[in-house]
Image (cartoon, rainbow, N blue to C red; front, side):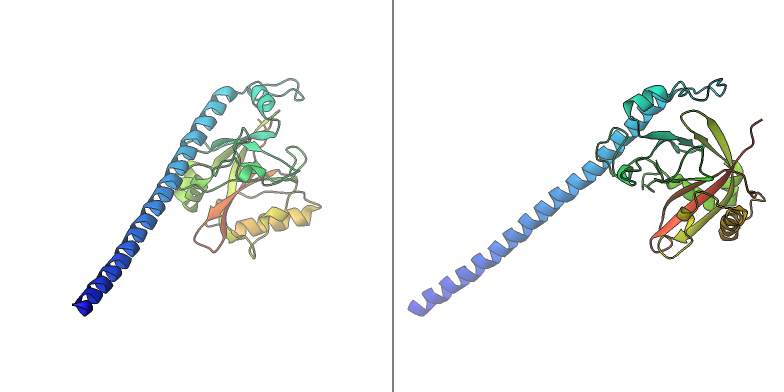
Length: 262
C-alpha cells in the first residue's frame, strides 16, 4: 500500500511538471505571438502614417512654377515646406512611379533621416536624404539615398531600372532645389557592393576633367545596359542609391545627367 502511494505521488509529480512545462510553452508562444503581432501592426501603422504624411506634403508643395525672375527667392510651394522643416534640400520624383518625395539634408548628422520622417518623428521609412557634402548648386554630383521598402515605397522602384524597357519608359529624373527645377536623363543603372564595390559616394566635386571622366566611365561600364547617353566635363549629375539584395550588402544605383535648359 505504501509503495503504491509513493508510485502514485511520483506519477502525479511528474505529470505536474509536464503540465507546467506545457503551460510555460503555451505562455511563451502567446507572448511571442503578441510581440510579433504588435511589430507587424507597428510596421503597417508606420507605413500608413508615412504615406499620409508624404501625401500631405505633396499637397502643400502643389504646383511649382518654372518661371522665376529672382532665383534667390524660395519657390512658391516650397516656402511652407521649408518653414515647416528647414532641413529641406529639394524634391525628387520620377513620373509614373511612387518616387515623389522631399529630400532632406543634415550635415551635422548625415544619416538622421534614415530613420526619421519629415516632422522629425522616428520612422522606419525615413525620408530620402542628400549626402552631407552635397551642395545643390556647387556639386558636380548630387547623391541621394533612401530605403528600399517592401511595400514599394521610398526608392524601391529604382530597382525597376534593372529592365531596359523600364528605362525606356522612364528616362527622366526630376529634381527641384528650393530655387530651381531640373531634369536629368538617366545614363546608367547598376548594382555594386556597399563596402568593397565601386565608391560612387566618393564623387561629389570634379577636381578636374579626368576625375569626372573616370566616374562617368565607371558608371557606364557597370551599367546593366547601354543607354547611349554619356556626360562630359562640366555637366551636372545626380546619383540615386538604395539597398538591393542580389549582392551581400548591395546597392542599386541610378545616375542621371542634367538636361540643358531650353
